[in-house]
Image (cartoon, rainbow, N blue to C red):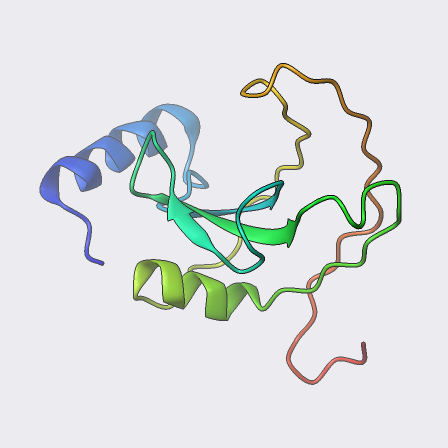
Length: 118
């Protein structure tokens, strides 16, 4: 999906203010209680963020869950273009839409090449 003139202008302005590492698009992997795994939807705030359900339901609540994703394939499916170099990773635990509280632990995050051992 090619960027509109307006979006390109906003990105140029943001990069001028904040630096060259402002991403043009982002994948957001989520654990959703209702949507099935591998569902995807656009952010309600922008069409440059794609949410992908990496885990679903409550059967794994309270368990350590290993997640593996092919970020390049997910990006191509979401945006119809090859991914740029990864400029950052954000980790968040968020329940502001449900009003609940939650505790989450995160382990190592690794990016591996296609031929790397699992």
